[in-house]
Length: 133
Image 1: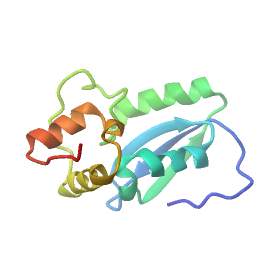
Image 2: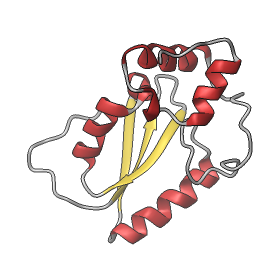
Image 3: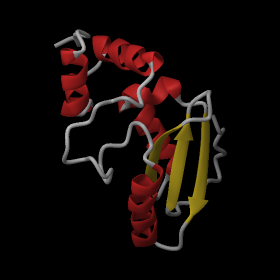
Image 4: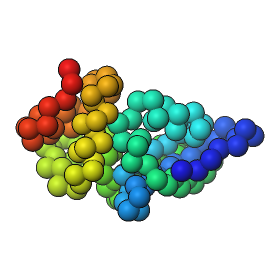
């Protein structure tokens, strides 16, 4: 994981998160990357899987958001829901590993279930993996 320095400037970026196997797991956009990563730490069930972060600067927030949407559609990161081609169709979760399922289940044991997308909760439920209420 990248270490952030105190002099970080506010600027629009598109960031990519990878797991230990260098698998792209999430793409996001932010105007303050350290703050966004802190938010992931507090509220993203997949945070424990993050091994590497890459980012690219963009001139405006609009440019970053547009680039994020295109990147998600073209690169299909495992844990993005918004902007994915199959967003409005049922997902089969075939791209999830046993480690992904375990990490999500463990996170749900002690965190707010509403922070995990409904499609993920449904997958865990129908897979016989019950989440804490």
